[in-house]
Image (cartoon, rainbow, N blue to C red):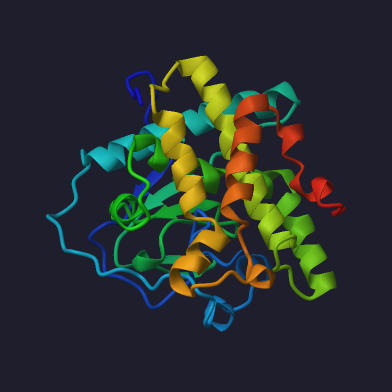
Length: 284
């Protein structure tokens, strides 16, 4: 993945090294974040329970983080590219893209959605419009989940920015209202899954548009992104942790679904192709 032509975002806050917070909501890519709790304002610890997600792996202590940490630089450049691409997309339809604040932290962080815990990975908080990321998660993505490479990291970030796009376009509010009416949104075809799959599709749209603009992809990059999408499918995680698949408890979609929707976004480069709700017969 070529980074030279990607500018670093200025919408960034580095909280690394600051005192940690309390136990918290978790996150992202759709690994452990409970979208239901974020949207409904429910204490996520009540929903996590025995969900079958892998327990947080032990983290090794590293040297004090620096501004030039390679993963930090990569992340800032990827976020900058998401800002450029989404600004173009919003502008083309007469809108204005408002960037999320990219926030890196360790230990724990106070957020508009509660307290974030570093062991739970990246997540997006719609209340404060921030993407939260502990950079140590990338080591876990590579080692524990078998999805190495720079573009696997880019996919993680692009997925979380996809949730920000959902927030800006009003999808998040409509999903929240629908979940309140339905009393929940889990299951292999539920609102939570549809929300996550759309974020995957949006990550694909960004990939296509960014490569057309910056020509940043190299051989093997797409395979890295697809491997990351596959590794975090609900069925794959449940097989690993429970030894069986329970579709009624899905919150993010199967590996095949996640890969498919990521591909859809990349192949079309169009937001209208990412109607994961309509494809499931759901009207928001």
